[in-house]
Amino acid sequence: MSRQCLRLGLVDELHLDVAPVLLGDGISLFAGLGQRIELERLDTSAFASETHLRYRVLR
Image (cartoon, rainbow, N blue to C red; front, side, top):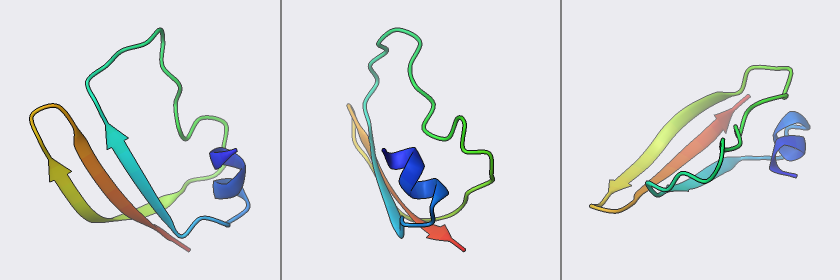
């Protein structure tokens, strides 16, 4: 669903929460989009067990 919204230009910002857990092979957020998505990093908060990232989608 998030990839479809990115492809259609419906996303203004991405908020990603990253935790060091590996489950299987993982899923690429940007795989299969068929286009390059330009992002501008707005904020990063890093802690011992997680990182929070916020990006603006550039058009």
